[in-house]
Image (cartoon, rainbow, N blue to C red; front, side):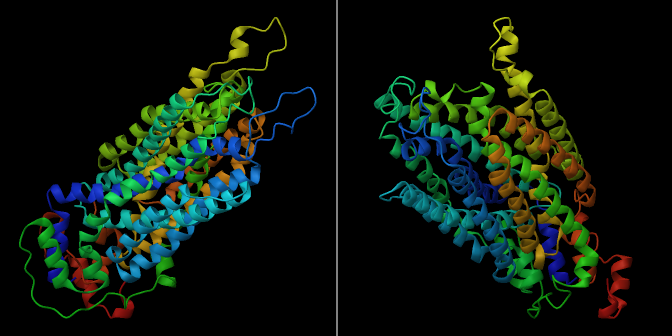
Length: 554
């Protein structure tokens, strides 16, 4: 590896934790905050949309009371799942584009897309329910497309900016902002609905089916969706000021001097290298090649399969909260609430679960990932998720309670154990985040060479979103069938987590090694030497690689 490149990478890997690291975490993390907010805030308001646009008081069986408006299954799946479809497409496209044009050039484009489409989602108007939903789905698809681009770009940028010792914690901190986004989605929904509830109270549905749905509720869901544009817009200027990562500039663009100059500004220290011609490393093996399959094929299979399996379970848990909470008794029956009150109760439950289970899992990963390593955290997370969900599924009726027609039935039999239900549900989310939900994001940003890093992370993330789509369209359909469907879905997800546990063995540990050592780029470019200790001399193996013909080099 060229001496100039050695100097830049050595400075990055051995840099002390300083202000620019935290600045990069905030800039990249705020994008993830917005991503999570936009993807999950819809959960709190879909039932409100159902009451507003799909309630027909005459559409009920004789002798039975009408039920609150429920979105048809295809409409519900479309509203929740269309953003995930856009995310999948965005991950593949922007992941590839990030390797072709550079991380910085594409980074601002994803943010503009998110801001514009978040605002447009709240402005989805139409003369009929169908036209409103069609407009909403159109903008949420493109919102997801922008969100998808943020996955590979944020992960790779943070990975390539980080020092070797705390790289895992820095990438995990960026991803932990997803937990904050979920938390704030619940908080904003709760605050907005409470304010409207105070101003526009209404009778419960069982008292007056028509008047229980406030017309002002149409503003509630629009405000909640549009708020997602605010945090993203605040970071646009700083994203545009970030320099291109030195690893992309040196290893992909081949401009060693510019890489050194950019990092000298960031690190606030002199990095002097001799003038060298701009030489790109792209002449080596390609992404679609036997050599890539030989070196990284199993790695890519491991990152894609584990992320795919994780997201089936994780997104199923997140997106079906609106169905799980009422059935399990944590939230009152919808007939005992008016439309806006239902939003408040659902969002309050979402907020509390995020506060006590979701967010702590993310930040425990930040603190422990460079001590325990990625492999152990992912393996343990999958296993404990599987155990918690198996208990939830097998003892589901005992935990949620039973429909009691026998006057001799005990109160415990009828009411169940909702507190224990919430404990197990919360532990599942905790071990998802202190586990594979974090590590599947981190590892693809470390395993692959710089020229493929964004693309491979995008492919891995897209596989995850394919799993999320299965959760949104498939598992959610089971959840809408009521208690039996939820029980079957939870047991199935327990098995999915166990399969994820097994596929984790395809993913190697990356803790404590430089990105070039992990990806093999130190050997490809002539040996980087012991840069972790600041020594730029070549190793014996690296020198031997230099003597081999190009076609024989590993």
